[in-house]
Image 1 (cartoon, rainbow, N blue to C red):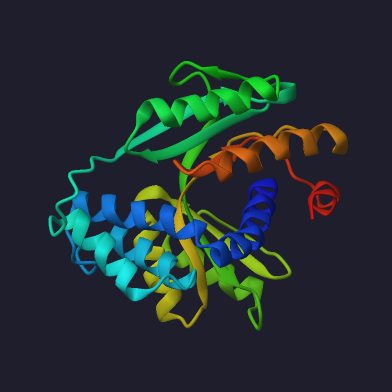
Image 2 (image 1 turned 90 degrees about the vertical axis):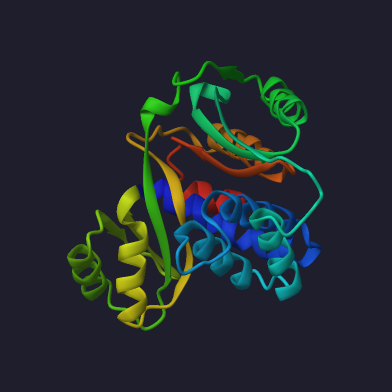
Length: 249
């Protein structure tokens, strides 16, 4: 899971730049809307919405934007837009497995953009479940590492039901069973840990190692996929080593 956590850290740093351009607000707004449509507009009774609100606040999304997105999903909006959640699967350069989570009001537009990027990178889209079997759906909790003892965090997280903790210099990553995400997050928050991100994430069962030059080629495709307006998240089984992360910085 180390490669996955490094990729998440890279995305978080780049996400700060996206936030300045307001681009990230579009994705966060869609997530808020669909969470409210599925589970209602009360975050106390809707875990997914509560997590979406936390991510929106962490990105400094204006409160009015958050409220409008929730109202739209809970029935307070009259725009008539229907959002679909889709996961596309494919293989990038050098056979790296890739999953793309999409939230869109136009399936054809979303698929066209993804297919174009795969073709340009000498990759190809795959049939349903051709790639997904190589991943687990897990809860992902990111914690600010400042002042945190990783061993104590591991004990607290394990006691709350977490699967694993990956320690890092700036952030520690806690992985949980998908159904335990909210419970573990609540326990860690009650214990005083500073949670900077929380979501469901695809985690590769086995990571693929590539030479730096080849890995950067794959990472460039992952970044371009992330930049598509309809794409919410991208996961791969590429093992991003410190050397690869440095080359991407």
